[in-house]
Amino acid sequence: MAIKISRSFVMRKLHQLTGIVPLGAFFFVHLFTNSKAMSGASVFNDAVADIHHIPYLLFVEIFGIFLPLLFHSVYGIFISAEMRSNTMNYGYGRNWFYLFQRITGVFLFFFILFHLLNLRFGAIPGLESYGNPVAGNADKAFAIVALEFQNPWIFILYVLGVTATAWHLAYGFFLFAVDWGILIGEKAQKMALYACVGLAFFLSAVGINAMVAFNKKCGLLPSALCEEAEKKGIAEPDGSRRF
Amino acid sequence: MNEANVEKKRLENPPQTVDFRISRREKLDAPQYTETFTVPYRRNLNVISALMEIRKNPVTKDGKQTTPPVWSMNCLEQVCGICTMVINGRVRQSCSALVDDLLLAGGGNTITLEPMSKFPNVRDLTVDRTQMFDHLKQTKVWIELDGTHDLGPGPRMSQEDVQERYAYSRCMTCGCCLEACPQYYDDNYIGPQAIAQVRYQNMHPSGKMTRDARLEGVMGDNGIQNCGNAQNCVQVCPMSIPLTRAIYETNREATIYGLFGWLRK
Image (cartoon, rainbow over all chains, first blue to last red; front, side):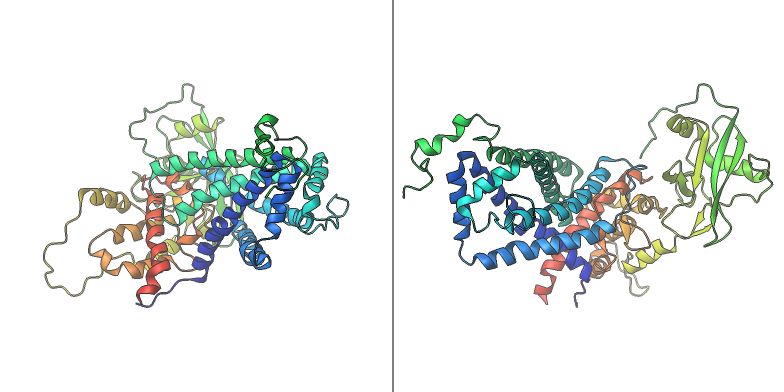
C-alpha cells in the first residue's frame, strides 16, 4: 500500500527529534565545558581552545547546532501559537506542564538569540564581549565571561536561561518518549515524570554552579574539591599544559 | 471521573432560589448574550430539571419575558452524551450535574451554563458535533465485511484486550475531551475521541486487517501529532476511557509505520 504521511507529521517528528539530538546532546556538552570553569581560568580556556580545534568545526556548528536550533525554535513558535490554554478551568498538573513547555520555549527563543549574539558573536553593545566574543578568543574566554557575570542583570538573565533550558529539555525527554510511543502506561509515565523533574533540578544546579565558578573558584562547592587538577599536575596554575 | 462510590454531599442550608446565568444565541453566527433566570431550590435538583423549570415560564431575573432556552437531552443518565455543556467553566453532562454539588464546589448561588466552545453553536446551549463523526469517517473506524455469507466464529481475544476494548467502546461522542483539549479548535485535530476508536478497532483481530488505512487516517495534517500531551481529555472524560493510553499506543504504531513503513515498499 502506498504510504501517505502528511507534512505536519514529519515536521512534528523532526521537531521532537532535533530537540533531543543534537540540541539536547549539545546542552550536556555545553554544561560539561562550562563546569571546567570550576577548576579555574586555565582549564576553562584550554577547553575553549579544544573546541576551536574540532575538525570541520564550521560544518559541525552549522549542521550540528545552528540549523537544528533554527528549525526547532522557529517551528516551536508555530506550535506554541496553536495553544488555546485553559489552565484556569482545567488546572491539572500536566496541563500546566503543557503551558510551561511553551512559555519556556518562547522565552528560550529570545534568550538563546541574545546568548549567541553576546558570547558567540560579540554583537551586544555595552557588554564585555562586544567585538570580543568568547569564540575565537580562547586565551581571554574566562576573563570575558567572568566580567560579564559581575553584572547582576546579566547573571540573573543567565540563571533564568539555564533553568528554563534545563526544564524544557528534561520535560522534552518525557514528551519525546510519549510522542514516539516509548512511554505508554500511566504508572510508567508517573515514574518518568519524577525522573525528569529530578533531571531538571540536576541540570539547573550544574549550570548555575558553573556560572558562579567564573567569579568564585569551584562555584558553590568547597574550593578544595577543585584543586585536584593542579595537585595531580594535570594542569599548571599558570595555564599551560604539561603534555 | 467515576463518582459511583462517592457519598452524596448535600447542602446544609440550601438557598431559597438558585440563579442560572445562561448563554443565549438566536441562531448560528448570531451574537451571543447572557440571561439570568431564577429557579426555586428543591432537593436533588439537577441542571436539566432546572432548565425544564425555566422553560415553563421563561422570565428573566429582571422580569423580562423571553424565549425558553434551547438545549439537547435524551437519556438523562449520562450515557448518550447529547446534553454536554460547559457548567461553571467546566465541560460535563448537564443531566448528571447536581445543583447541590455545583453550589458546594462554586460557592454563592449562581450557576453558569454555556454551550461547548469548540463546536458550531446552533442555538443557545445546542452545538453541532458533525465534525466528530467526520473524524470517525476519516480514520475508518469500522471493520470491513465483504458479503453476507457465514464467516464462521470470530477470532479469539485475550481477556485483557477484551477489557481494554470494552473501555474504548463506551465512548458516547459527547465532545468533553475536545472541549477541554488546549490543542483543539477550528476542527484542526482529530482529537482523542477518534484516536481511541482507532485503537479500539486496531486491537480487534479482524480490525487489524485494515490497520494501515486507519493509521494513515490519523497521520494526516490534522492527525495524532497535534496532541500536546496536556492530558485534559482523560481527566474530563465522563466514561473514564483511557484516552491517553489510546493516543500513546497509537503513537507507537504511527511512529513505527512512519519510520519503517516505506522500507517495506
